[in-house]
Image (tube, rainbow, N blue to C red):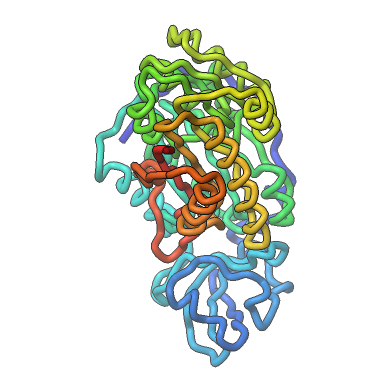
Length: 423
């Protein structure tokens, strides 16, 4: 698969001190060292879960270098897996090999990147002007790496400080496999803090696109700012849900809540719905308005506001809709936040039900990986009981196929999109 890239002009970039704080390959021994687990902590890793948190280890590994290859042993000294360590992160060890004969080196990353891209070709062919996720971290056996392609450009996010040791090999291979020469590379501030490193943001080989990157999605002409947008640029996981939800909402009066740049609402309005889109980010709403104008879509209006406050005011004003879409940001980033997240989902969905006419459609989403699908459905059952309304599930969906799920890492099954009819 190759993508042609037009000539691009260089741009200034910030290159983090992280590049000097991580040892070079030549400075680290090619031989791995060992760390042991506490008693009875081996079971998740025998099932190939890739995350070893610090509290599971009998020895902290504080003396090891970030990016050092480590063999994980159970408390009795039996070999379990091989990974790389970050002594500064609570997610202390990420596992990449459960075969003792498989080395962690440049060839492993090259093979995994090639396999990840080939995995995206199992279902459909390459569409050069579209967008897709090429690498999805744990699901592609490269924990700590996200890669999205937007037409002839890539957005690359490292979420593992230890994996940065191989960043040059990874970026060179991505460029070779895709032909994309415009590659934005990031470690965001939140990730950097958790990983004990510095943020990173630069254009690979100092080659940037001329302005925004344009791509096609759901027959819409869209664009993304790879430097100023979210993480790898935008959100691609919902794109099939955008078109599926629209099939239930054609010609209806609908409310799109937490719309960001208008994903659900733009597709619905293109197919005849009358859409009010709400988000707290003025920048995102302005981009949504530009997208509507670019695609000649008139049946959509963008409103700035907090989702809870705005919906509460609409309920108090007696407003009614034939469809409501809820796509809020992640409410639970850790297991300690699950109960609070479920309360927030319940409040938001209760307000949505109050706004819906009998027979209306609710499309409600959660991108919190810590909130299980069963917990999310149970929350909806409680909403139905409290509101004394019938909620009938029409579809229970997940992300697009280029966001696969690793059966060994349930957290990769993060996105829920449930389409219901409300009686």
